[in-house]
Length: 593
Image (cartoon, rainbow, N blue to C red; front, side, top):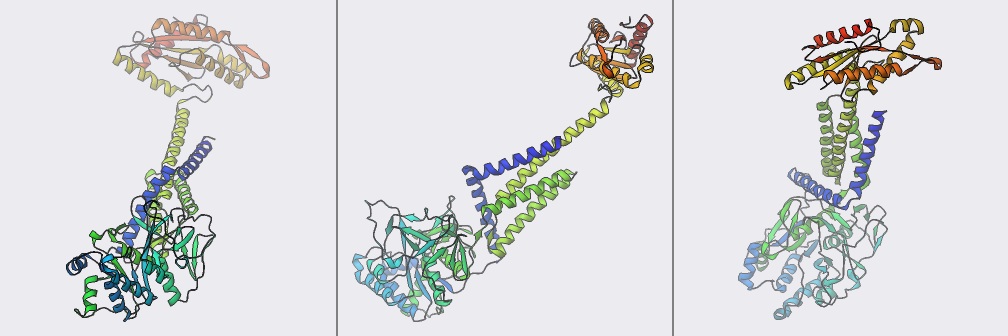
């Protein structure tokens, strides 16, 4: 019964922990922070093992530190005059690249170089594979009046998901690019990013909301246009289904509740082929021989120089250029390589499963070491399974929450097991030290306690007493009424003794009809008075037998006190025994002298 109760309490406690941890915002946030770090660790291990390979069609024209110095030396200012980009675009288009994209925002006209701006606008009018960036923000209206954007920049989104919202991706202001570019091309994407609370960029938005309309993120815009061209993808409306997935032909892109995708990283900074901008300028001018093949390439222009402030922190690098984040996003989309995170029900089921398995092991395996080793092995196997799930199936299985549940189960199961063992030990100890009939301590326990009392009294120079008593004419009573009646007499006399002594006194069955009482810290006079009281109570008490019969019994008693009547247990027992027989020989139902 006790085991069932403890098991039930353990199960209730465990369920309560599951409920509390799933409902507490603070605990959930704390677990999420640690879980994100496990994701970072897995991603770092994966890129070191080269589990994923980037798309070599993507190249980056980098405005690196050397190029930034070149620009200042040769053009005298940053930003670079925009006709330089126009000339580079003309040069690149000769080699027929698939896409040329600028992870740069061409905002505000350069009043000293209007013609340069116009050259870039003409390039956007001329080439339909040319893309650029814009971003949304929440600047106040008194700083910048929110502009209206051309309808052709927005996309039609049908959100059938009940979980995916775009609250975090909704903005009320916008920093627009040049009007000429805005009116010349629909190939403008938004470059807002999604950072976690710890500042690390693990996710990217797919769509962003502005003035009630959806606008695609730059990488998503380029990627879908690339798929339309190269895989005959046809999408007039982007559907987010009930499973929180954006449907792109045979691709299903899982979104989180905020409308983000989780990036799958291919390596640290510098994974993609980098072409310094200054070298491309020199090649276009004919100052360097062209050693690059841009045919069918996807070319990203972006800053990598730390002084130009487009540096992100990602799971695989603390210093990661924003343009390479965009390239990674595009690479994930083209290769259908995004990470999808297992839902909370899967996490809870895995945690509960491991917790139950741990509990069964702890309860069924007698060796604590073996049980601990088996439990630890389960956790190691799960961690490895989570790693391989990400490596081969791009699935992010939560590690922290299931392990937390499993470890909680491990600790609580050991506590329950200890309580059960403790109870079993107490039960076994009671069986070993208690007389089954009278429920008094047995003779062995009496001898142990006598020896202990003698040692304590010798050490602290104190005294104790003991009483030995015998039921008068007990053999004759057995012969007259039967052994069952005799057992009833023994049990009821024993209960009378226990009721009439102190809690610290030790009542034992000495043997047969004899019983004994150890009285710690008790002198001769108090012990004798206690014996007299017990004698009177037993004689006054009616013994109930079967059939509502009642009888009376008497007892004879002998008392001895340490150290006056003996300095060893056997001497004290002999002294009390002699006084017991003196009581019997002088008429019974008394305390012997």
